[in-house]
Each structure stands twice: as structure tokens, then as C-alpha cells.
Length: 170
Image (tube, rainbow, N blue to C red; front, top):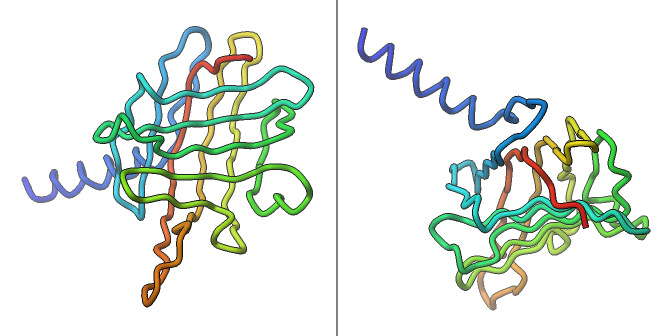
């Protein structure tokens, strides 16, 4: 019975990490999840941020800083010409002149979504409350080492996660 409980608890916990947090109206705390190559990584909500610019060129910016590396940039996702609406925003649309990319920096590791060639990653915005400045969604992107090393293959990083919280309107 105990093994069944532990297995069920482990599966339920794993599924909870993979799903976007429930959206609540009114004041909300920031909830961010990140998996790197399928392994959950703790995100520091003090240094991480969600931003939506309100100028002529609206930009959605998501920056997830790792708890174990607060001095590193972590994962940064940019969606240029963001219409502040629910929808899917694919990275491969970078060819349309819009900047839709992701970068990751931790220690000596630097990786970019556009270094992989074709990238079918996306940001799925599931809910936005423009009055409360809250946003909720998920993301998936493949990033590759920025430098090709002689005699070695470029490393690929699959970044997946969710975000919910108040965004800073700039």
C-alpha cells in the first residue's frame, strides 16, 4: 500500500509540475516552473520577472532565474509585437521579422533558440487580465550551444515550464 501511495504521489506531483498553475482573479503571487531536459529546476521568484511593454512595440519578456544560480541570467524568452491577447506565439516565426526567441545562460553555458535552426517551440498564453496586469501560460523551446566546439556536438537544451503572475507594464 505504501508503494502505491508513493507512486501515486510521485505521478501526481510530476503532472502538477507539467501543468500551468490555475489562474485566479485578483491579487496573485508569481508561480513559475522550469524543466531543463525534463529535469525540474527551482526558479527564484525574487529575481525572475514577467514584463509586458505597453509602448508602440509591445513585447512579452519572461526571465526565469535559477535558484541555484541567482547571479546568472537563466532563461529569457522574448515575444516581439505581442498583442496582449491569449494565443500561441511560435519561435519559428522569427523569419517574419518579429523577434521571437529564447536564450539561456548559466555559468559557462550559453544557448540560443535560433542556434538550432528550425525551432518549433512556442509560448502559449492561456489567460490575461489587463486590468489586474496578470498573465498565465506555458512555454517550450529548444536551445543549442552558441559555440560549436571542435570535435564535439552542440548540446541541445529542451526548456519547458509555466508562468503565472503579475507582470510589470512598461
